[in-house]
Image (cartoon, rainbow, N blue to C red; front, side):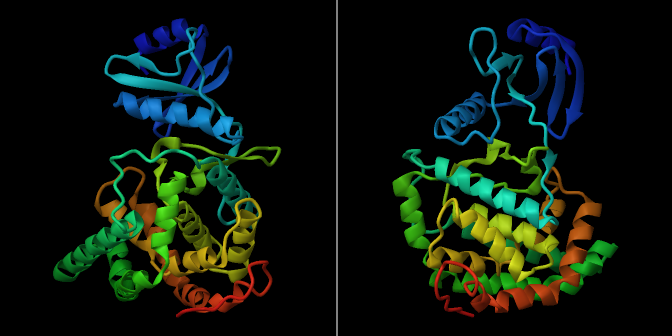
Amino acid sequence: MNKGLIASLEKAFRCQIHAVKPKRNVNLLKTDRGYWIIKGYKQMDKAVWVTQLSDALREKGFLHTVQYVPDGGGAKIFPYDDRYYTIMKMIDGREADNASLYDVKKTAETLAHFHVAARGFPVPHQYAFEGKSTLLDKWESRLEQFERITWGIEQNGPQSKLEQVIQQMSMPIIQDGQHLLQSAYKLPLTPELFTAMEIGTLAHRDVASHNFLVTPRSSCYLIDLDTVGHDVQLVDLVQLMSRMLLLQEYRMSSFIEAMEAYSKVNYLSDTQMWMVHQLLRYPDNFLREVTGLYSNRPGYHLRGVQQLVQMEGKLLQERQAFLRAGEQIFQRSPWGQYHFVG
């Protein structure tokens, strides 16, 4: 970090900074007032959004999220050069582990509490409702990009072990993606969209396991509010279930327990439960990782992507069995009779 920035922070926040340690896209500060996390933004409005959002969520009772530290004058945004900095109190916790069903249930419960608090945020006029889901738009673009990647591999031949796996898996992945997108009109997404607009709901939209921190006392925190925006909250639930099911080896029992943990806090109707299971037909894990790597997006690395796609390949039969076994969802849950649509 810039020495001038450190000196300015010490003066503005009336503290002494003893050490600085880079961590992902932030820096950990060791100060005489405790451990803090500092994060810089290029746009002022982004820094304003996350700090105001944190305050609003906390006012609504959701305390298990980031808490920003004000400077000596009470401001929570510190401009320096061409950046706008925020400082958060460090949360003493480990990243959640989707291989642990205990952690999965804690994250589902925490997400539900976030969703309850993330209501009543009026939708800005620029968010015009077009009668279609942004999630499906994103998935359609992701599938199209994957098809271009596989076409290139086919033309040039696989150049790596990863490309060999992609080539082997491409047909079922594309078929699953196309089937979901073609049958999506059967899903009652439009009422969910209207409800989201009417109530003013926010979704986190990046519920990766590293954005949940589990403390030594078993509290679970949802962090990184940068991606939060007006959306249908079911997109978070689909994303969370998709990510955890891979490491839970697509066990139906894990899905049911995670959904029950969520629904005890934020009730899910039969229709919503059914939609989540249907939307999991889209092979988002595989497509997200491959397209992320080929697009050079931050956080996507060859080794990690190769490991994930190989896992998906090994669990292909388990995944298909999970998608076929929809009628089991309600056998031991409080949601009533489930009628599976294949």
